[in-house]
Image 1 (spheres, rainbow, N blue to C red):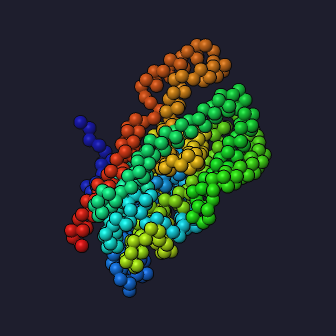
Image 2 (cartoon, rainbow, N blue to C red):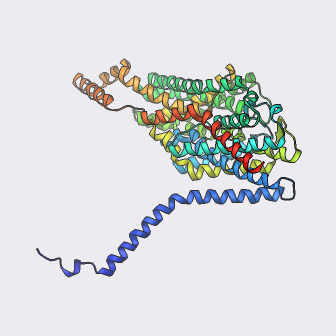
Image 3 (cartoon, rainbow, N blue to C red):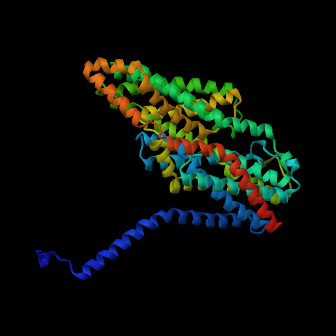
Length: 501
């Protein structure tokens, strides 16, 4: 065997140095996975110091500081799990980059929490437990801490396994479980629980159906038209106006209700006026954007990108205004109960508590949000700007319809259900649409149509457009969120009671 030339043989020292370099590179790769956890722990410690500065000389300061840390932990989990539904479709459709989505979500989530997050919240989420049934303020504090910690742990686990769940349902389950452990089964308002259980089914189905209907409309009146650009100039401004009007109605109902009382009629009127203004402005804008575009689907996608960015921002604002209460509501109740030695039906939110909630949501989104953003936007089903537009618009429309009907719904279930609806509709449409086949036949000869149809049928038998593994995981997580959080809260309350009371 011929020996390698001496110039090509590495000295032993160089080989050893290469090994050290590989080890260092591997260590850096592993350490990057622990960096977000480390930053999160630093935030929790900082929160405890921050809370301590406000309550250090007051009775029960240690309890308040511990509750502040748990509330901050819950806020980070809300940011990591719940917020991703607002920007996931826009990222998955490549209407914006991950960095842009994170920046927009952080700014508007924080703005929604701080501006319209409200100064008064219910101490018992959704009226699940009757405060009069709780023996005293001390028991109430331990029950709220158990509820907050259990819901945070459950949302954390859901994020880890890749399942977007309702943080509201997690808090409801936590309150129910700790309430039963502290005051008995009779303290629970089971009528409210039945309504929440119904929302497990109503929310995703309603969101999915509405998203599918919008996608069917876009396919019928824009995509499968011979002159796509002319069709887009006619219908895209109307769709944008519908989006603007819907989101303004949504914000009036959900995002601004903490600042002022807005009836459904007034909110719809606001939506009609702003939608008309949006249509008048978008007609020349779309006409200008469409100049020179080719008559193909790729051109249509460019016209939906800007509306998607606005949709992500508005959804984030409304979400911050509403769901920040899942973290700071129980925390505010704990602070009030410790200071006043009473259980109040409603309490004011201290500004420092609001800051903890807004900061925690933003930090959780930055550190842990990209995982679920990619899952919602890319891994459940393939999204383009038109499909993502249907998802975002469906989320707002479904909330308005549910408010009109008086139905309890989950924004997370609606958004993810809309993604499922778009994917399942595409599966059905690909297999059954005569319009699609006629469109292909009009642009190709018979042999090409038959070959494409046969190839498509084989491909559809081999795979689905919606990943069934994600579908089953997410639906299972939805079903067990309330009972899992309830059982965990009861266990945590029992342990706390045995150790500290």
